[in-house]
Amino acid sequence: MYIFQRPENGTWYVEFSAGKRRSLKTKNKEVAEQQLNAIKRQTLSGKLSALNNKIKSTTLLSDQLNAYLAETTLADKSREAYACAVRNFVKDCGDLPVAKIDFKTLVIFSKKRRQGGAGEVSVNSYLRHLRVLLNYSRSEKVIDDVPKFPFEKLKKKHPDILSKDQYELLLLHAKHCDPEMYRYITFALWTGVRRGGLWRLKWEKVYENHCVVILKGNTEHTVPLLAEAKDAMGKRGSGYVFRHYPDIDKVTKKFKRLARDCELDAYHFHHLRHTAATLMLASGIQLHYVQAMLGHTDIKTTQIYAKILQSRLTQEMQKFNLDATYL
Image (cartoon, rainbow, N blue to C red; front, side):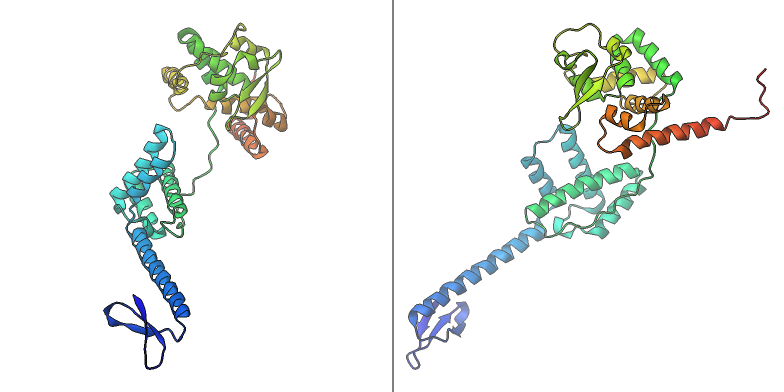
């Protein structure tokens, strides 16, 4: 690409490849050179735009997964969750360019997963991980917009709680078979503290009538201590209050082993928190105090346990019979 001046009229022209010419409509060489530079910039911009569009149209979902995992620090379980979501998508819909993944494609993927036996929660999990990858693609300017995601609407379900017979059986079994887990379980039932809070609790954060535990998000929360909770902590020492296993999941596994022994397979350690909250309300403790005890920022979360209590009361009242004898 270059400019030249026609002698017959003194006008400057630009000549492109293949003999194509265009008048610059000026007789001033300096102006002509400025216009030439502008044309070169426009041409380069067009080529870059075309190249960018080509990249957008060919960047595969698997490419974005690899790029995202390379740039983020995630736990092995989280990395596997992203990989699992992409594997299932590729299996059902192919390894598509991210620019071609739209709402219709995501609906097809969801239906195929459901037909394959995946539950609503699993499908939503796949979709959440795929949405993160597409949001990442948008941030990297691989796509312009993220499509709407067809999340399954889950039926609201109250959390399960342990009955008095169930948690007493669990405590009795733990006391004889795993005294350390007996301490964990007892403290959780008398405080509602999460697994992580117990696992991280140190004696330096334990005071005469309360302790300070770490909540989700690494925020501190003060928990009042009743006599039963203090007994579960044992004699004051140094370091961690409860046995600090190298991996917090060890607490979960040990609890599940005890629960299976008691034929309580459906219950996890977190159900102790649900049970504690419901028992606090059943004992007459006001809702806002239970909210403070559990560290809930929104009282609506605590109200769930009031609904559980009401549901249990309704179930129990079904036993009421005027013909029942009491003598």
